[in-house]
Amino acid sequence: MNKNVQIRQEIWQEVELLSDEQLNQKPSPDHWSIAQILEHLYLTELSVAHQMKKAAERTDTPIPEAKPIQLTLDRSRRVNVPTPAIEPSDGYKTLDSLKEKLYRSRQVLTCVLQDLTPDQLKRSSMPHPLFGAMSLKQWVEFVGLHEQRHLEQIKETKERLFS
Image (cartoon, rainbow, N blue to C red):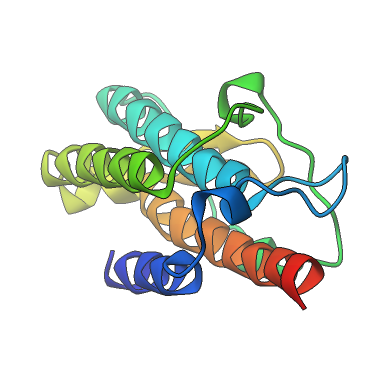
């Protein structure tokens, strides 16, 4: 989780000087605003945390092989949101409200992890839309990699909008 905390801090540093209006600007109609990216991170982390809690209760799943989740950082391939539950809305968002949401989702994930043993993290799994079954331990790492991927998207969006 230390890497996840570091990446989250980098995200806050990247957006802290932006106004709410700037956060909600889209570089083009088919690209997300920075606010939408942040909302997507919140929705994803919350969804992963809830699914992890359920997955840890199942004991009948085989231990999955480690997946090449570092590929998450490859931004040369666009990945469509796999489920509407993690698709951000078009509504106007404030930085304060997004910080609160991301704080809450991190709290939920942290609470779920506190209730899991190292054995559950290694043995329990849940499916990923691209990588297949992943251990809960890899899911924790994936959350950080996912945020790192979107940190780069935030930087690119800022470059397109404000340079």
